[in-house]
Length: 498
Image (cartoon, rainbow, N blue to C red; front, side, top):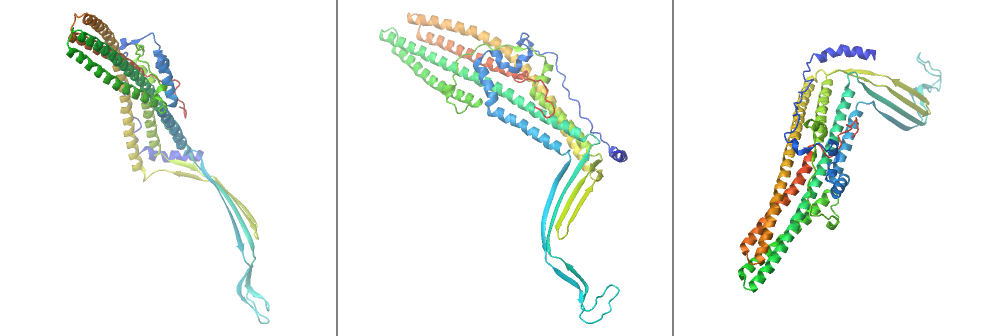
């Protein structure tokens, strides 16, 4: 190791002379206001931790059950979870390159040889004078050799290892980058779950809105039927014309057609909700939805700065930014010299006519420094720096989008609350006016046109009011997600965990 350090000192000046001005990325600009402009839409009575499971604030057992069921069984939740497993596998694959590498190899061979005689010649005469290199007597073999016959077994095994000595923190930097990639996958998973919870709540509230419209349409049909009966009775007594009775019968037929249309809409909405929670093949009757739209709860009071901790999409962008910075550091470290150790051992054994056993071990030390490859490596660094700056911009955008969503959500929710209150008053007054006209019509004091106009005004006002109540519930769910609800931001994921 002393020699390695000395070699590093000797080779480093050539690396540092290359000029690595890509060491740092730009600092993100994410200065958030101290408070929201629409903070009045939130309530300090609710603690910020209530956002973790915001659907429980509605005190709605069906909503809670459907969301928590979807978080377990929905295909979207399962798919997002597999992305974490994929990120962990990629992390393990990346870090394994920095561990000792090597393979155990073995071989076995069986060889059969036949007997053979070889030489320069055979002497057949009497006395013979041999050379200094060795002749033979009469009848002897001259320069002969004999290869014995038999089987020859050869067994060999070897194990060679290569290990890169990390003198400059390459493995540590790679681990940080891989950990941030896993963290980004975990935050992506949490963001997908938060979106799924909002989608389920939105689908349930809209399905209930459809059920309310269907109930209103049935009530309209009932009123139209009663009016038609009343008109027919009045016409039979000569109090009104038969054309008025025909007009009322037209309204009955129109109301029936609207009931049929809304029945199909409500059934389709329930089927879509079943598919969203992972029960797409269940009978529709297993999901009953009541035509109710209670007032939504107030949002907890949180500061804009909490978005940096609570929003999983912001945390994901932050993790991706850190990963980009670490990858830039990895590319810079590629300019430094690398050192490797290559120990190995080989065993061989031969059996049969020749018996032999041998053992060979070795230890090698290697060093390399990129010289001709430096232009390519510098281009890689410039490209990674550009990607890092893109990650900085993406993080800034994520924070700005998060603040926009929260601010707009608070403003919209505040407007929904006021609008619903005003429409409730309007609906109550329109209903009162219709009932008064209805009594007058039954007494023959109000003409049909005035009655139908009063009914139309009331039904339209009621429809708008019910739509506003449904919209307020949907906007409340969207606001809770915008404030960072739907997951617990603590504890932060550790290395390799999510």
